[in-house]
Amino acid sequence: MRRRGFDARRAIWLAAVCGQTYRQYGHPENAFVVPAGFAVRSGFIAHSLNRVWEPFGFIIESSDEVVVAFRGTSSTSDWLSDALATQIEYPYAKNAGKTHRGFTQIYQTARDQIMTSLRGTDPRKRLFVTGHSLGGALAVLCAMDMSCNSAFRTPILYTYGAPRAGSPAFVSAFGDRPINVNRISNLYDAVTYLPPPTVKIPRSNQVFEYRHIQPFIALDFHNGRVSANHMIGSYFAELAKRDPEYAGRMCDANPGFCPAPSIE
Image (cartoon, rainbow, N blue to C red):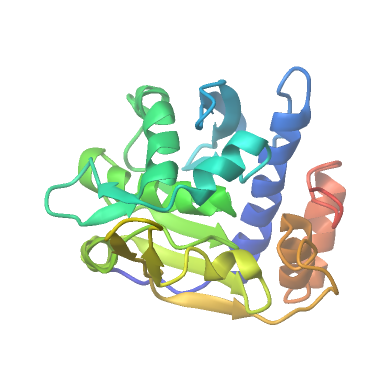
């Protein structure tokens, strides 16, 4: 794994990008605020257990960067997929261990759209893959896929409040790839402790192990409620404290781009 170092400004900016995935989902025309200097390359849809296609994120592009952003849990079906904690073989790399069945099935329904959209993109551009909550787990699956199967061999990953996505073998295989990992996690965010390290399936002998990708950047904030400790607006507010001048300029230059604590 190649480590370039945590970039606080990039973390602030990508947290705002993640906030826009929720705006896209909630807007009747799937519109969202595109930051200055970027254009929309495509949106993409996916489905969870109910097989209803929903907006799950977008790809934006500038003269030298591409960003793939994934949305977190927003519907009942998404929650059911989150709870589907059995595992399947990671389908996009050999001998790469197992990943969460529900997360993997969602990513599979979006994958062809993402790959098609990125085809023809200048591979010299830096590729950022990002997501919050469930979207963070999807971003992990995507970053591995990009590194193994696209022209973007060294993606830069930023996740926020992401659950565990795979088995110890998957985490080991992931760590062998040249992916720059920035897993940002609030110590008081309950979602980041799911699924638990060991999952025993009721009325069966199945046992699954889960681990987090490494390394991670720890945040330490407690906003009084489980949801407030997890929402992307809270992550953005905490990260903005690391460079408030930059965050203020960014928000002023891009009206509606920065998430509020009540975004979820």
